[in-house]
Length: 377
Image (cartoon, rainbow, N blue to C red; front, side):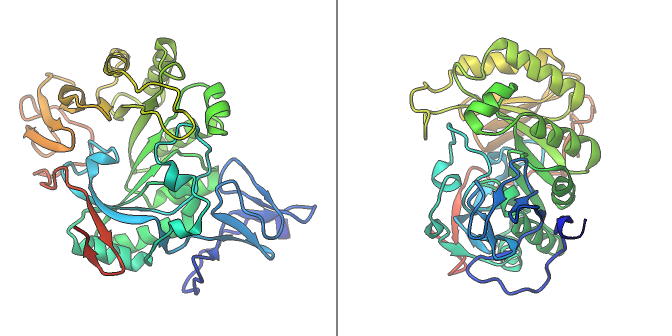
């Protein structure tokens, strides 16, 4: 294969100039273009062109990542905001992202970052080692690659995850899961937890409203759950009239139960009008409650609602005796009836990554200035 062998060697100790860093997973085509093999878009690039994600580009005869070491911002969040309800509850997570995205969701709720085509969006810079050290100094238990999709800043995310392990920190991917097989295996080998957006359960929705395809996302979900130790939770944003029909939710829940089993948490989140879909109303609380009940009836043990105030729908219940083992009011934890991962009432195992006591971070959100190394008020 020679020139068509996918470039995937680890880059060590190379100088990063203005965010440009050698990219992996690409090959040269017979017509002189190069193909990006990181995600199923398979962008074909001439010299100077960027992929749809805007982040990965061809420079000369190679693929580069243009946002390595540069971020759209840093913030300490509650882990429940990712959302992760069964991964170190109550702890703080150091969150950051870059710019761009490899999907084109018309309903994007983070469009000012993910759809950005302005490098000036990347106002802050930090090396993987600096991120890990800062997160540890601020008392965070984990670092989240979020805001836009970490798949497109693959090298930066993995190198940060390696640095985090050296500081005893966990790594969390908040992603749409739109990634090819080989990079998928490498990426999730470094992640300790992931929340994957399952945008809908029809190919038509993915094609028309995201510019992508459903099957690669289902493949990612199955791979994470069946082949890795990465803790998995899934989020579906319910959009009125687009993916909130009972038939589709039944199909989603049945696939979920068959492929991922009853213990992977599923979050149904409320849509609010934004970006290119301002003609749709916000998701009704009754729609979320109905979807949650359909999933529970299908056999799922941990189903949540998000982006609305619903303490019952946000709390965790023992699937054996029904005891509320973790009470949540938005991102604030209340009653705690877990005994190191077991129901304090009947002793049934509660799936997740738990410690003897929950964290006490609460709902706080604290932006961080890496330039100053201080929390901004």
